[in-house]
Length: 284
Ligand SMILES: [Zn+2]
Ligand SMILES: [Zn+2]
Image (tube, protein in one colour):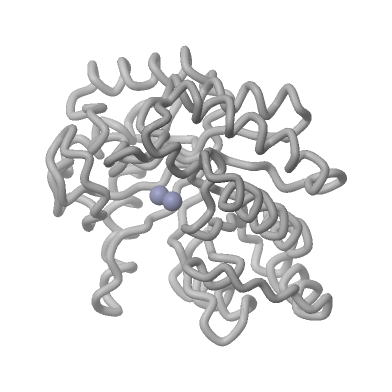
């Protein structure tokens, strides 16, 4: 079962592979570039080549790129909207250049325009983005959010509509389920029955076959708190029993998982990985 952590690219993209391998990861997520800046530098082809060969030797799968946090693919502001499409397209091509399997993105905020506007706006964005993805094997994954403020993406059904629209426009796309965000948005999965209900909800919203990645994070905030604050596995309000129930579900346990848990000390990643491996071993 592919399992990894979000890994730093400090010192160059290839360094992230070394870090992931040292942690015993079988999957990995990185930022393609500084996630809080609009400034974009193209990736030198030799760095992309080195990444691809190092990654191939490592056997890591999947390799996931997470987009810039400033991207807002449902903004009502024309300037922000077109800038977001431009940056997203560049991230898409970086992900393609390094042979990433998935490009994970949040959709942003329609401000006070509401979810119907956001769905149509995001669908329009993907129509434009489709061109940038031509010929790339990278699939776009849309991540659910905690639904804070006017942010879009707390509802799996809303995301399902966007994913279907993107697929119809020829953008290979699927869902990335973040457990912290889902819990903060009001989805509870603390018992096997609740896990089954969540899986049914995903299946009706997008189809379980479109759930390609799970961001496994505990939550500092309570159920439906809308608070997007990640916590160590078992150390937050979701709690270890809920993760045990979630990872025991046959439809969930086979989905690649990435931890985005806090990294305060060097022991944090190894400890969270060990907890998840323990839960998966018991289930399998
Ligand atoms: Zn994210
Ligand atoms: Zn996430």
